[in-house]
Length: 275
Image (cartoon, rainbow, N blue to C red):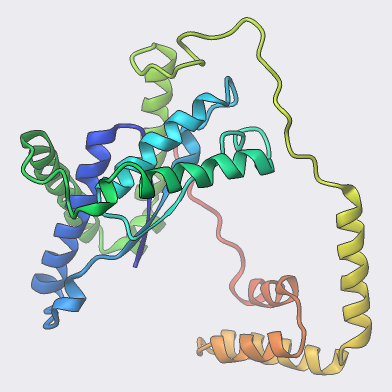
């Protein structure tokens, strides 16, 4: 199963999901020799795009999220996450979370778009966009194959360069107003309205630290250390670390301790920044 983002260009996003399903089926059949029809089915979750949310006029984000969610449903998503209007500013408030949830529920129960499969099939625009996206995505896959596969492409910095270039080009378009962002480079307000943002009670952090201290005091310390040492040993031998991670969890090792043990062996990834 896959995890996709959905952005603002409604028709393009619908076509993107349709192209992804078609590509998956063909790649599984032709490249990997899949025999079962079940293997050809691309299942995916979709989240509305956090990068499209604006801190300016955050109520506008409700509309953006609704458009994106509708595109995801029309594109055939199996499950959906709708972002909240204030996530460019803080963790979402309860009111904002409710609006995001109601957006999904209105689409599901009132719009009728969930009652049909591939409701935009046959549209010239959608079909031509689907073909174009599939063609250009396959060009990327071919390029990555030529580089020796995805791992080699990452190590070479190719993937990061493509992401940086995309972000740079988008920012240029926003600053030149070639790409309109309502409330940011078009229709701004002289004085922004202030909404009630979520504020986290500092006492929660102190309470969690206290609970962690009690946990460490009550658990069998030597047993935890033994499992963590075993985890590092298996990691050094390039073995299957999952069973040992489960043993660490059962002995009440914390996520941080398990992560530190693996960092000690594997180190930390440093992305290849290119300009």
